[in-house]
Amino acid sequence: MAGRWVVIDGGQVPLRCWWANPNKGNQNVVLVLPEVFGINSWVRSVVDRLEEKGIASLAMPLFARTAPELDLGYSEDDLIEGRRHKELTTTEQILADASAAIAWLKQQNQQSKITVVGFCFGGHAALITSTLPTVSSTFDFYGAGVSISRPGGGSPSLELLPTVSGELTCLCGTSDPLIPLSDRTSIQEALRKEDPEGSRMTYIEVVSADHGFMCEQRSSFNAEASELGWGLLLEKLNA
Picture 1 (cartoon, rainbow, N blue to C red):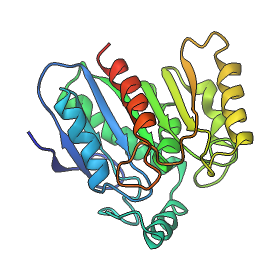
Picture 2: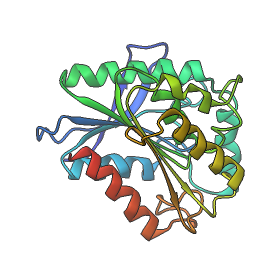
Picture 3: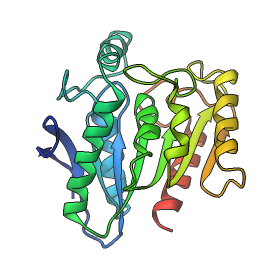
Picture 4: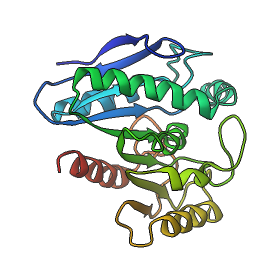
């Protein structure tokens, strides 16, 4: 079964999402938050890969107000275009849209446990979305800027950690120029401060991994790091 486009109309704006549901009884449902390149072929492949593992998932656009059908590649011009929409996106918009998407997912399966998975700017957005009480667990893959900024302005998104009730895993590569050592240290210390026992919040540093290490379509793809990331995610979803 392949994924398909669905439009969710329950929130502030329509959300054109990529949805796959294998109907195999796994109570874990994943909300995928994309990079600045939109719901492109790679993000859709993440949803389809989860579907192959028997897990329903929905990829939600982060730029539904300015570019609802954004589908970019990985050239420098694509990056500039994606970042232009990123700068127009606020924390409030991310939370509103994620709430609408999660409400829709709950309509599909009221007993579902919601896991949020985000990459790049989507990783930053995933950390923000982890504050929603309906989110059981969150995977933030190389979410840059969480220690120094917040979409739309305000104090750094790391300061939202006290409002996170579920589990949170942050994965960063040591060769990621967008998450330098000072930022990685801040993330690790903030997670440890909020959860000293490490029972809910986990920081994982992937040696030699660059930004975008999960994405096969990027030159920074790292097969070993990607295997680690997928392994951790699937272990949680199949637990």
